[in-house]
Length: 312
Image 1 (tube, rainbow, N blue to C red):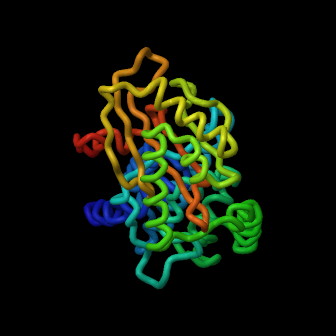
Image 2 (cartoon, helix red, strand yellow; image 1 turned 45 degrees about the vertical axis):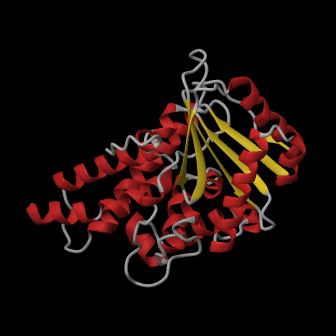
């Protein structure tokens, strides 16, 4: 049993990265990893060397039930994935070659994780294993206990559903990361200066802002579309709700710059901590603005946002 414990523990980091991408939730990933590893301790796979496929199969089945339950419950307002630190992104793929179609950074980007919500749980698992973790169709079939032809069908369906994302995606590189950083700085400077014209000029025509309050805090319950409306919304937040005592903290979350704002809320309807991030298109203009307010979405980063690092 001791050997099995060590073997299970060695897979924790890979398993957490897979479960986070599968669910888009750091808290759910923590729960799935804990339950999967507990089952492995109690009843480990019988064949030597079968630990990772076994763990993936168990985690996928548990994750499938979780995703189905989440969909049945519904969600108040736009759903966003929970932010994670960049230190959590560097999850090594098996040492057998290059990463898949989507690299480890892109596959935790907010845009990618939001796009995955269009997939059914098994489609999501197959796409992640094939196009992020570079599994072959045969390996996926073995890991998920499916026929190889079934895996190919699921993969085809998943890719078809991500066609819109693929047509717009621009994989990250150093130049684009720098453009995003510059755009974020200008975005904040324009809001600070109440410069609506400058702010609108930074925004792509198709820009949309998504605010995830989860029904817990005051937040826009529909996507805010277009440069004029997005600019008006964020200038209004700054002028009406940001207090002089507010504290600001800058971070890199999910491979992108992010600003955390903490303040004593005016009343219980307002979030004490808000995290805002964004993405840019190929020309460097802002095409998405993401604001995270719900307490459940900040579990992985809340303790470190303002210098109080206490990781679980």
